[in-house]
Image (cartoon, rainbow, N blue to C red; front, side, top):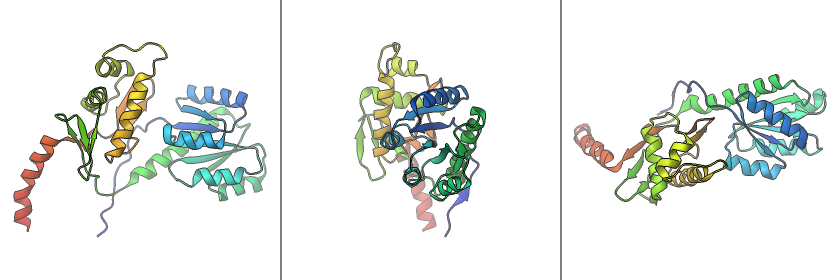
Length: 263
């Protein structure tokens, strides 16, 4: 039986995350500043390898690749293979043949490097919307809940595997869940989880959230369960997926009579 169904995409969408790949440094700095001013989160990758690293760390929705080298089509194909984010190829040429080649190698859009920044930002937002909504439109049965065990300070995966959290990680997770989908500031996470205020250039909360993301992923959560909220801190994308072990046990006991009756 086909158990897929359509759901309404989240609205408003999270801000786009873009990686500028292999842009000349002066152009990369100017374009990154302009896109950031347009509300787009930007990282710069000087090389193809740096871009692959940022796919795992920054989780962009769009890669904007400067295609000035002869092997650019092959690099477009490599970056497009995973399908987790969109690829826009920026060409120094107006050649229709070059645009077709990039599209045939997996680019989702093609633009000229001299295009006005406002149009670049609009194309990024348009591709970002397509990527996010495509991922949200077809949803299968809800994934199994992630269980929290406060007594043992751990999360429990689908197969019963336990991942122990540090005290700071557990407090940060509880704080984000208590916010019920609202952003929590980095400063507040520092005060409640690390027991101290943050100083300028202090990235300890970011490191804490990075470790927490990895541990939640080990328990079956998406690495995008915790997202950065621009100028606000961090947010849990789906708080309803988390259950305490006590509540999960109550739900299981309540379901047993219904299961027996159905059998």
